[in-house]
Length: 203
Image (cartoon, rainbow, N blue to C red; front, side, top):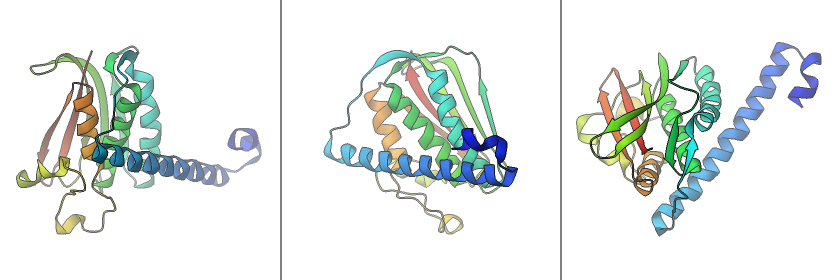
C-alpha cells in the first residue's frame, strides 16, 4: 500500500505506514523469539549450517533497528567493511541474533547512538571468524550481572531500568544459537557509558 500510494500521500501519512510496518515487524520478531525460547527449553533448537554472505542478512536486521532507534530519537549507524562477508553458520540464526542484539541495545539506551559493524576477524577460540558487533551508549551492565543476563528469563536488574519491557530471553537465545553455530558472544561494558556485544561466527 505504501508503495502504491506514496505519490498521493503526505510525509505524515507515509510515516504512519512506516509505524504500521514497524509494528508488524516487531510482532513477528516477538513471536519468533517466543517460539525460539520454547525450543531452547525443550532442547530442540537446531542449526542448518552453510556458507552464506552475511551482509544482506545484517542489512535486513538494520532496517528494523533503524526504525526503532529513530522512534526513540537515537542515532543509528552501521559499518560493514565489505559487500561480501561470508559466515559459516545458520543464516536465520545469524539474522535473529543481529535483531536481538540491536533491539536489546535500543531498549537499554535512552540517549546517544547505536553502532553496528560487521567484519572478518580472528578469534583465539573460534579461529577465522566473522564478528558482528553492536555498540550502544546505554546504561551499561554491572560486573555482577554479566553472566546472569545470558541465562533464560534473566534481565538486567536495576532501578534505572525497572520500566523497560522485556521477558529476559533474547540474550539467552543468542548464546544458544551461537553455541549451535560453533561461535560465541563477548560482552564489554561500562556502567553509565554503554555496552558492546560481539557475536562471533566461524567463516
